[in-house]
Amino acid sequence: MSASLTSGTYGRQPAFGASLVKFAKGFYDTLVGVQQQRAAEIISRVREAEDLRAYAFRVAPHSRGFADDLYAAADRHERQAD
Image 1 (cartoon, rainbow, N blue to C red):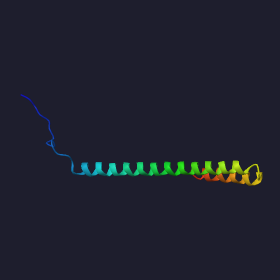
Image 2: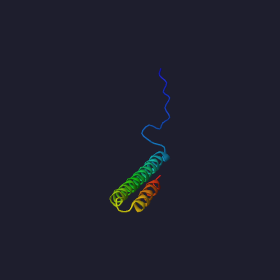
Image 3: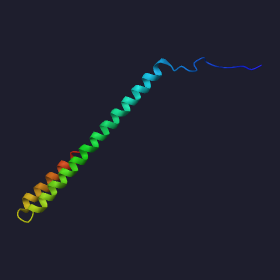
């Protein structure tokens, strides 16, 4: 004599299972997209700040005060990404 304890759901998934998986995947994809967009924005700001610092370095021998202002502006621009 063997007893079998089955729920009778083999081969079927609960009705909400597929939609829950679809929702979770969409939510995850959205989070990944936001993270990638944020990373691209940070990289862009860092590059722009580096370009401004390079310009400030070239200007420094002629106008130290202006170069200092450019360095400060580059720092502020870079920090806006935080």
